[in-house]
Image (tube, rainbow, N blue to C red; front, side):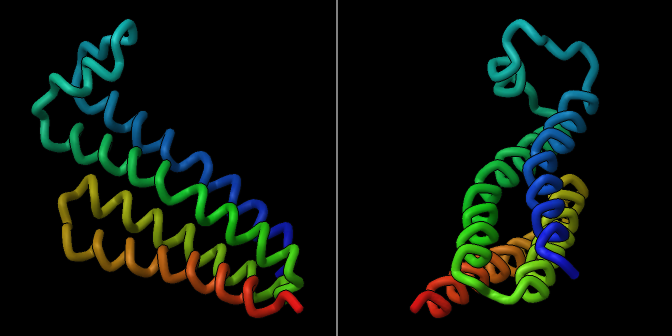
Length: 131
């Protein structure tokens, strides 16, 4: 694996929030593009709310992940290790979003913990690689 694998994972992670919000908007007819946040706030459809929450969570998870990849690369962490953690993060975030929309709370939480574990591993390796 090369470092570009990790960079592709950053791109995928950056796009994931938009997949989930697209699903939220497609879940119920009559989406109001004039007031999208107000429209979301007025909805009580459970699947729509879960998809929107998956969107928000994916946005929250992106910045630490991207920072972890960049810092690990700058610190000289092995490219294979960065790529492996990046792939695991993206896979876990996909599971997280699907579990969120499907209302599988335990699986969602396990995927979240796995994803944050990848981020922590990237950041710790970056911190311990700097001399």
